[in-house]
Amino acid sequence: MRMLDLQHNLKKIASLPLFAGIAEDDAASMLGCLDASMASYGRGSLVYRAGERTGKLGLVISGRIRIESVDYWGNRDIIAMVGEGDMFAESYALSPQTPMLSDAVADVDSTVLFLDAGRLISSCPSACPFHAMAIRRFLAAMGRKNIDLVSKMHHLSRRTTREKVLSYLSDEARKAGSDSFSIPLDRQQMADYLAVDRSALSTVLGRMREEGLIDFDRSSFHLIRGR
Image (spheres, rainbow, N blue to C red):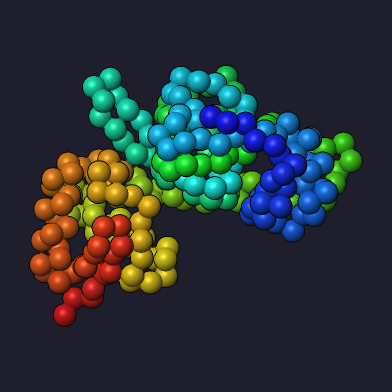
């Protein structure tokens, strides 16, 4: 981990969805109010470890953060991938006495902005309009994350590996608005996300390709309607 200077990154911070439309000077003032800090992490570095407590949520400036749970025997469950502009650990930051159940890991080289969640959801004494705007965007982002978690539960409720894959790929196509799209997961990560065996996943994908349902190249997929 390497701490970074906020002032040198104001332009990038101000372009994030949470701060969009807020002037850089106002964003700088707001970052001070929110006790903000920023750090960079190399691929595979832990941002938060299961069991930690924090009052700060993370906002991804660049890169991608992987939220995962690893059991005593090393079995991994990928809960979510958090990309640029999205946040993580916000639920724990709003309940700072609650220990985290999952790790937050840099999936690639990443930069993260940390904000005091309690201060974010509390209007500042001057009741500035840009703070109120940020609160609304924060709540909207939490709503979208809840929808994503419901979607994952829908995939995992399927009985077979094939049904889970069909559900997941269909959902990703809807998100992309296209039958051709890329996913932020390699094969092992996809298996961990869907809670299936990697070899079984590869077998299912191969059969679906043979049947003319899909085509793929690594993490790029193309869905084909039945003939």
